[in-house]
Length: 176
Image 1 (tube, one colour):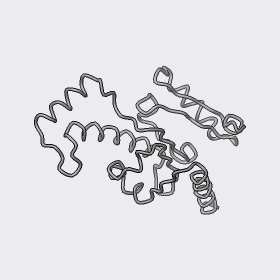
Image 2 (image 1 turned 90 degrees about the vertical axis):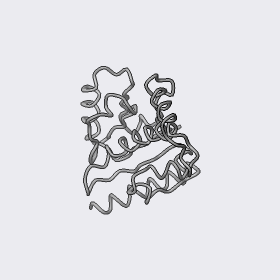
Image 3 (image 1 turned 60 degrees about the vertical axis):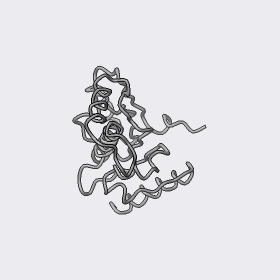
Image 4 (image 1 turned 90 degrees about the horizontal axis):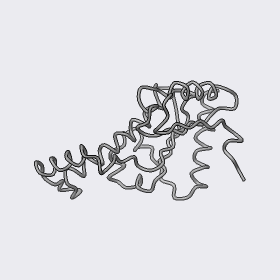
């Protein structure tokens, strides 16, 4: 059976990671080595703010799921309640203003995470959005145009892996 740790160094951040400096240092050291590294990070974790994963530090971003905020947060509940009481329901989607705010907060986190990997004109990264909800037009419309215009939906893993392989093969040939 294939094991990712046999190919790359695996480094994990958790929501309770206290020393993000050590995690970041460990990752950059191994990412720049011949073997490379994979960083598992948490949206909203310590490494999600202020760090850029440009060039070899971020050649692939895999977003697993949609990082919706905690629906039970008192602040979020009150904000959604206020919006629902003072604004009209969206005619096109049928969503309440609170629902629109909730979804927008999620998509802001998605877009910020994706944007950390591509930092300049010659930079590149494969972006894998691993959740069937990313195929919904309402969700896709909240992605940046440079992503949504290139978005390809794959329903099965084998075609996804072929597309990722071809993406890197094309970029490797372009940089030679």
